[in-house]
Length: 381
Length: 180
Image (tube, rainbow over all chains, first blue to last red; front, side):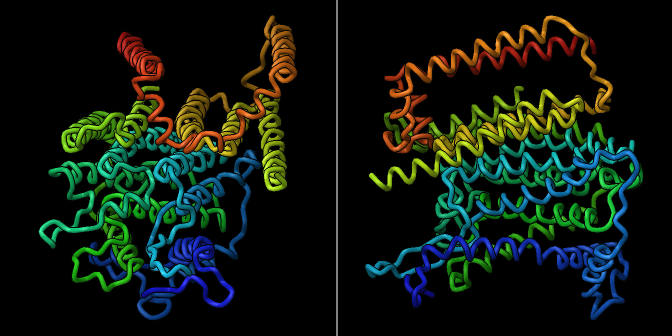
């Protein structure tokens, strides 16, 4: 479908970022009740239980009922909490997650410019040059919400949850950044729109040139590292030690009630959606169709479909795997994932150097090298 | 010319907002008795610095500022503050010493230096602050090309710095191993 640039008085090219803002916010915030329902139904299915089936058809209205309940619950402020930090913490969880969504391109629209040229315009809030770094920066801020919630609650279980979360997120962030850098090396760009565009096309007309299939399997290894690290980053099972209910009551959000708790809940799902969106754009071709003959399906459907696949993997893993012991979590992060990510990054860089014809000062090589030095430098601190 | 002036004014307004917030957060960081709140104000200061870098179109430095300082180092700070349980306001009462008078003297010297730089080099700095002079100024692309350009002298210092970091890692491991 090709849209003309001027529909009445509206310049479509200028309007697209605003449409994208509405799409991202509406998608993330309105989908959360649906995701909760999906999660409960799927987990019930896997564990051979009934799941929600009382409110509405097939329990569909259960999440809405829960939301209304949370909204009207008493807002309890525990004794001796640090009020400013206590109220700030839920905000710090949800804001970075929503802001990181701004750099993820989720579709492409063809627009016929006034000059008659048809130009593909990406649907993204901010097509920033340093898209990946922007997202890394914002996701690295998300841990503050959890840590501060744990500290401000004046509860030892909350504090332990917050401490666990900070150590876990810092440890897995390194492996995640290195895995993301592999994708940057493959695509020679930090801009997510460029990265997705680079993944268009097919080998033998059938295998998509997504990053996950690139570089003789190295892309797949980096993808697996990213997927493990992203589960740990979002504090989801089997890495949900910050809120391990059998040890810590409810971990960092034990003392939070009513809407403050709901915001933590929404923040968790929002960050799940965001990291899944990064996985989609970085490894699985964003809006690019799986097979060439399926190209008639619009890009945003492909994007949402891939995104929801990752959400289903999240739920599947949660229902299947038991929670890791804390020392096992740390040794997995530091002794297995990080060295593996370093080796894969080295091999990807090697293959990339061999494949790229020599040039005086390769901009992308320099760019990748600089970003790599930065992340490795961070890991050394 | 009129357009240029308008841009200058907007960037000046933005600059003053960010500068005031960052100076206030720096002052609050040391004036606060509560270590966790101090750390939070330091994070706010780092964020404002990142925004200042962004306003000078140094995108890469801004992103690195947030990732490394706000995202990694300050989380470690908070972790240590909580682990040592010095989060209560009464835990850190400093005794008198040479620190306060020395800090005042150094602050005065620093302010004089800043004023001197402003008075002497203000006119030269002004035109350097216009980022549109250099194409792609501040992007990862431009920084990478500059650092790794063999005809420029930046490659050796850059690699030397990374070796310095490596020495730090080796030192940290040696210190930790001794206790194991």
